[in-house]
Image (tube, rainbow, N blue to C red; front, side, top):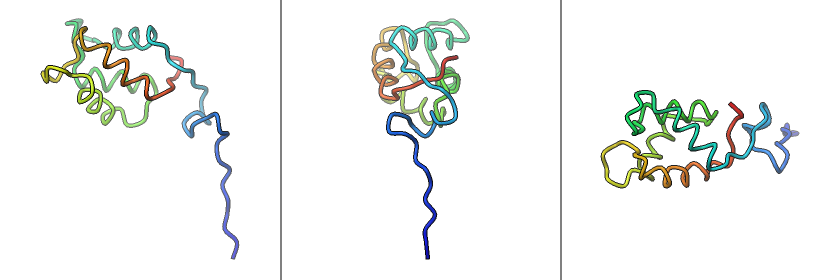
Amino acid sequence: MSHARFKSAPANRTKRETNSVAITCGEEQMKNVFGRSDSDKDGYLSKQELKKAFSDLGVEFPSLRAMSALWHADDNGDNYISKKELAELVKYTSTMNTCTNK
């Protein structure tokens, strides 16, 4: 009995990238994306705003990523990302490696 083999993505691409072109996000691009995601312009990113930002970036499982981002970057535990906590958020998002060019 032979087993069907599936073609894997090229070594330099993720599964997600095989269907769409992705680019590496720079720190400034990430700050701009998250700045635009502050829908109520209060200077803080809520879980819902984070979810939308991750969705806009084309990240899989944006709800899960938003919860994880809060866990990683919300130093004071208020369930929001402040401007002071943005550096940690950018550090966390940089571990995702790619984003869509939106």
